[in-house]
Length: 138
Length: 306
Image (cartoon, rainbow over all chains, first blue to last red; front, side):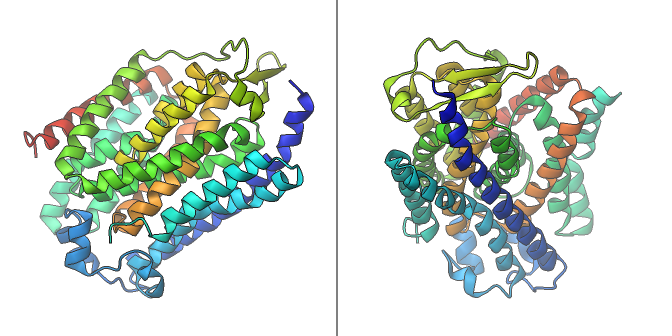
């Protein structure tokens, strides 16, 4: 085993770690800020908080039907509602891996490590596909 | 006294107290608050027990709280995702998570996690509840019987891991020596991660309970690197399934956010209490909690207990 290999691979680990740190921090701050705005009615919710106990025991499809909550990415146009603004932090946290993988791809390209470059590209494609809503039920 | 603290705290955080309070006041916030408190204590016991929060969260909250299982699984995935994201940077910097090992395994797991999420949201809740109960009881058996190997012997790496240059150096704190590690049975490991990712997406439980034994016992990764890399794999695999749950309306902020915040604060305290709490007692407590909630999920799914 080549010891230099492991040292060489540190570059990508450290870059991945840095992107993971900052994107996760951004996601957490957004999650907490929007949730506080939601529960303290700074951003009024689309579903009144007092009515939530009537709908949180419903299956997700029925909940969407009964409440008329937006599906897919439609929430992004309604960030004035506290319950929908909370999705912003969740989306950032769910998207962290995309940013991080994208950030290390140039290192693989520079090293001509095309196998890992391809794995990264395919992983991003899968995550973007999942995020796009194209495979959703609606 | 400290060793019994989690018992007392969990007792006082019991959802029955919340149910009584809601019935008395009709206040919506009592359940999310109870969720925060329960998750805080789950976070404390999860760290010394060596399990991720998600595997405790879904069966316990799914059995004892009024939220539909769709929202519980959505929140469970977010709990697993948030915990692994928070731990990721330090694990990578410290060499306890290996990106080169994680990437190919996470790729398979993230595809199958979407498949699991699709199936989970398509099946009737009672079927998922029964399957969850059976899986949790399987995890209890795995936790009670599984062995661990601090530094497994890998006589020779396989062709695939050599092609992918999956190997590393692990600094043994006790001896202070740098030890080279390599892996074997990589194709089989990749196959196992497809199954694990699927189960994680289906039940929203995260998958540290399965990732670590596969990495450590099957592929021969040193235990600490296996635990760290498992967390890194979860950041991607949970992410793909979380998108699917979010897209299909199966994430309720009022369920997900108190759970994530409670679990993360609890986990930080759990990490600090590692030296005070008796890890063996906590592990037995967690196995007992999983056993009760697994039976609870099974009975709820079968309609015997509501």
